[in-house]
Image 1 (cartoon, rainbow, N blue to C red):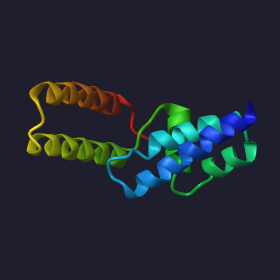
Image 2: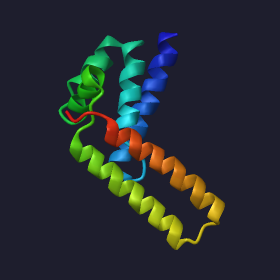
Image 3: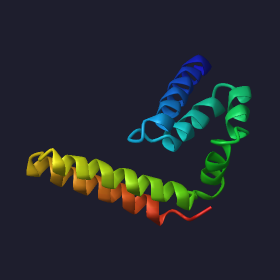
Length: 117
């Protein structure tokens, strides 16, 4: 079972790393998932991720207080606005825009109601 958790953790880590360069792919949720998986599979990988200078602080803030950095909140908001703007420019059908608007609004509500670090 530890092997399966480690495999999922490595996949989440890879997706999070790709998200650093791909603005529409979220990084932190994948890093949180990787930390969750590594906590069940590999103490060494879990400790490495928590002590990582870039990802570690965000993961620790979330684990300790459920907090999201205000800078990350702003980036998430910008990403959501960009994605929805692209959908509007592409003239997607109204029902797709409605589903997207509701979903993205719920995501933004969740993010902005989390405490700051």
